Amino acid sequence: GSIEYALLSENDPERMALGAGEKGTLGDWEVEVVNVGDASATVKLINSQTNEEVEKELGPLNDETTTRIPTDQNQRSQFILRPESNQVQIMLDILNDPFGEADKVKLVGYTDVIQLDNGALWPQDERFIYRPDT
Image 1 (cartoon, rainbow, N blue to C red):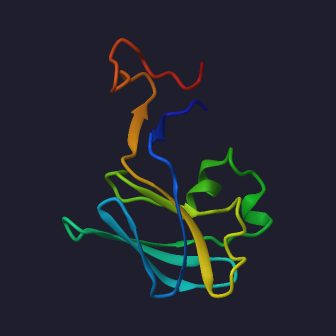
Image 2: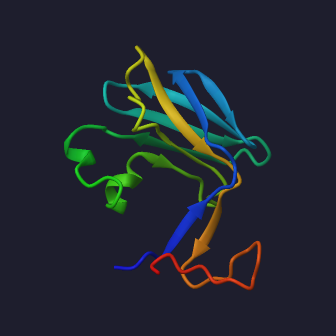
């Protein structure tokens, strides 16, 4: 299959290590860790402007769930939380031992995310078309 879209941000990733009940900030969004297990964590995003909330269990992270990372979209999605708008993204920091600190989860987030659909004009310069498959 071909790539339907990509999500990009020109901002540096924001890393955080949080325990259950702890909060961080990701642009206009608050990141709250609801609970942390041995191989998964439940994380909530709350928009400070609209009070929109999304929550998801990220994981589990184990040999079986990472066999086809990063190529398998379904496997990747279990480690990622985004609101419907795709403005921000928070995910397990799977390359940085996300459960290596006792009672904490390491997360990495992205702000000002834009979605580029296959064949769409490049938003910053419409002379160019986004074609991820070429």
